[in-house]
Length: 195
Image (cartoon, rainbow, N blue to C red; front, side, top):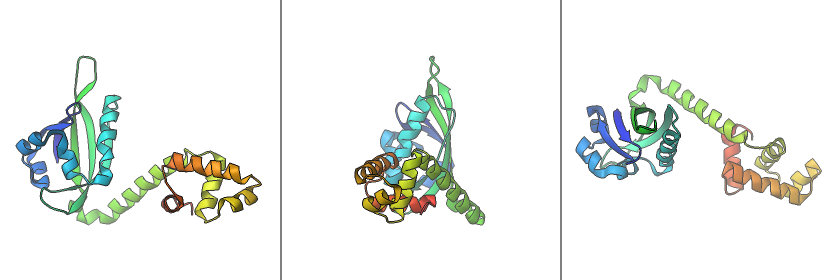
């Protein structure tokens, strides 16, 4: 699937026939939906990718890619696509106006499912490593112990810290990793291979 999108209008201005067939919308329908087109086909959990890509191009980055779920018009079936966008046209000041994007439907790559799975695991591992690298060394130790099920008092005793210091570190960890509670912290630890 190939399309051109205007980043200021946040709308598709052109797409190929493959995109029309895959998504189930004609180019005229896509244009009439304007900025509401992508929210209508993208999984709610993946919606932030659009905002991140727009910000990336507003900062004049040369390339943006992502993996997300989309669905065909009038269906409830989500399928995974990998997308790549690149600036296509610029204004007089050199700011990106239009982006040309391609999407590949993973379900069409049936002969390479194990390679796709491995690639996705590698992408997730790298993303999680980037997340963990936001932590200080002390926070990494406390994160690991918390993920292993130790409470604040036990962590404080193990590290010869005050309970208040451990609570402060855990609060900072939650903020940096954008987790709300211990369950999410443990889930993230499993994803990153820490636990």
